[in-house]
Length: 341
Image (cartoon, rainbow, N blue to C red; front, side, top):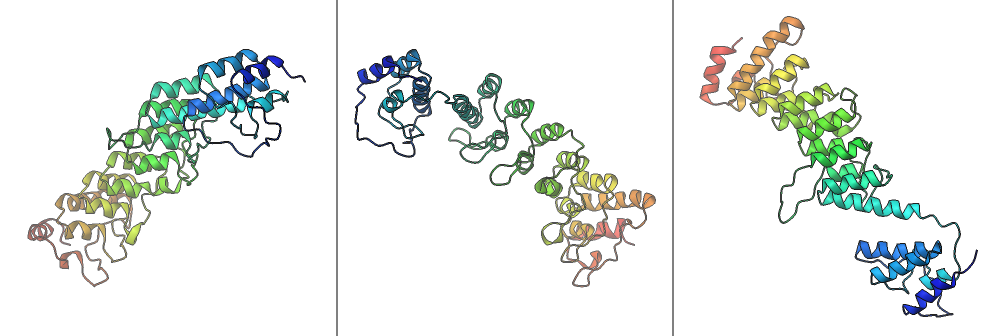
């Protein structure tokens, strides 16, 4: 271990102030500009590694406060006169590369994301300063003045998945990338994430298991199909005892009704907290398409599975059957013609 006189001379020529009584302080004064911070870190790295050329370049290329503290409470000149032989540079480079990666994701720059992943070995599931992983950051893009409704960038998501980012790795708030993508109702991104999970793997994320309800509620039959095939629960009851089938009937979504009844064998006679069935909900709202889908699917499913035939005699909590409920006149006429039993 030795002191390199050239480094000390360089620092003195850059107006470093020698203060024998100055004590090291804990912490590091925050610098607004990340590039300036990195240049300062590079100068400290060069001092620790006794690289005069690196110190000279850092001092010439960026306006630095040569009397500022580093993370260990050292100023450049105190560090120069007591060099540390075993300082680890790799962690700083990885930290900066991770910051650049997250900046590229936030700014929606796919090329920057690819460069960060290709040139440095990063932990692609590590948190940033806000507790986000790169993938959770990618699936919840920030709105801006120019883009109030930003979409998830598929190229960025693919680059992260290729770098082995985990679709189920939670951020500090306990949210997973796949759960956030489902919440954003982006079918394409959900498909990419499910494919990365080897598609038919059972979903372990609570939101993902319950997302069948969200897909039915939003009349999104393509996402509904994808989620059911990947382990989503089509029989789950949600708020006020509603099932996905009831939400589909409420939205007059015949496609989702066919999918839930034919593919998943959902019971059409399930009742919610008010005692309403999917058939009652369709009738109340005057949804003939949904009611017809329920009747047609019931005939198909009842021939294959006992106990799944549609029953119009079920009563709600007020003791009313589907035929007693308040509904538009055209719906009453439809029931009289098609579904009376």
